[in-house]
Length: 361
Ligand SMILES: Cc1ncc(COP(=O)(O)O)c(C=O)c1O
Image (cartoon, rainbow, N blue to C red; front, side, top):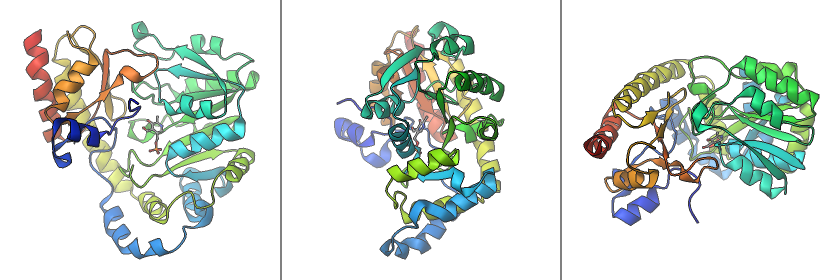
């Protein structure tokens, strides 16, 4: 079966006989700066805690999140990655009919299939740079729909909508009795605050999903959280295992919430690198480069003379892994996505890309 996500280093290592350590992975959108240094040093001292069970329902972390983002601790739920919460949510909500747009993160659709929801699709248009058109979207958010997933900013395009536009959707959805899940997995990377967390005060049928694995670079530990009305959180707790988050991930969560300086420095470093990569990629004629609002760049190869698989293979052979976007619903083999990495890694990618894209032009 074709892998639905990036990060398949093992496959490439085996296929091209390259050492895993020598592969540069642009296919997953993880903060290239790495986790806050405190996470490494303090988790090393916590290793012996693995002989204990984790705290049930991650209560300490919930309290800390409530202090940081507002609301009560009982409005929070902690997940083994944000993805776990998507699967729990659909089990609780059991939507007869749902709406997802395309392209977007594929796990919404996969989770909806586990509860036999009838999935309706709202296709974003290439001609509109895959942007959400709120009026067109509303036309598909009809009384028949029970659940809608909003990915803000969207993966893989990096496009986002403003808080005002989110409000318009929520207003519409409340009128039509549609529950809205807002996935803000990449919101921390943005240079402005578009989070819908404050809208929880005003709207009932919403749930905000946050990942801590991207910005804080701990995908292997798995950690995410969600905020919602207490009613939905109580139901979700009934559907999850009490020790769903391991003890080291809980500890990491508590550490990363006090990292204001790291957050500031990291944002600056990512901004500098994404601008460099974006501007250099723009110099390659015949590819269309989408502005990276978050930490990844979406590229349309249509006029380049290469499809996404050809570009993927050419890079993979040299130990550079990118996300071939051909298996995203709503896309074809004209699109790739690359994460923003360090200057050294970005230059290697650029040199390799230019070596065939520019000569071919
Ligand atoms: C939009 C989006 N939401 C959620 C996730 C999953 O995040 P986590 O690692 O916290 O499960 C991803 C991972 O790629 C994602 O792209």
